[in-house]
Image 1 (cartoon, rainbow, N blue to C red):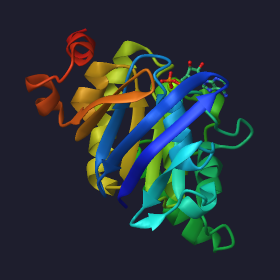
Image 2 (cartoon, protein in one colour):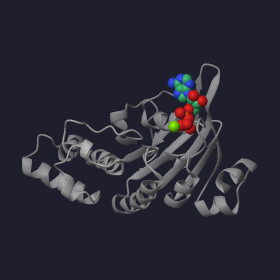
Image 3 (cartoon, rainbow, N blue to C red):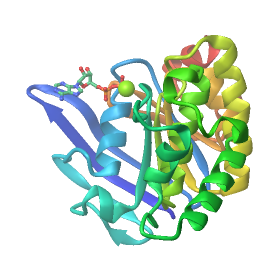
Length: 235
Ligand code: ADP
Ligand code: MG
């Protein structure tokens, strides 16, 4: 599902958090929204999701104006930095919660959950509770729960932000592999340039609420268009 962000602006009081941002996300691609803390990434993502209203501009999803559509109508799945799993539910039931087929037979639910457990490579852990999982495992379950709803778009806001460096690196590779299997249009926010450059098909670099550069990792490395980008990716 392609997404077109057109001239989106968002102000909080006197502060311009998102400043006339336009970009296109191609269907089935994995795009990183990269920038330092406070650059407007999360605000833009929330506007794309329909969780926040923009002051100006439009969001188009698959050639239809989605600017005034609800979160549900946009068919978007989310994963945020802090685990949002239900503590009192097992891994299986957390994932089953995301399914749109709760009225379906138990065996169909089991089959779907098994497929998702395989996809996140946690087959043996379905009966555990979130407290019995590592941070990385919890984020995988959160992703499976989002995917269970068969979203057309997946928005991930610093999904690995709370994890230590080693696990982050593993999950980077894993996210790339997962994307190649499911091909859901995915936008993920990160302030980690290495993570963005390694995982994404295209990278959108933000600073002070504006888009500084958009391109493939190679294009950005070969031809940074500003002093800021050069410094930021050089870190
Ligand atoms: P990022 O995700 O890139 O770190 P954010 O989009 O969260 O940036 O925030 C961009 C700026 O907007 C920050 O300076 C933040 O303090 C401000 N901001 C975000 N949300 C609000 C809000 N609800 N009210 C006031 N200021 C906000
Ligand atoms: Mg943020």
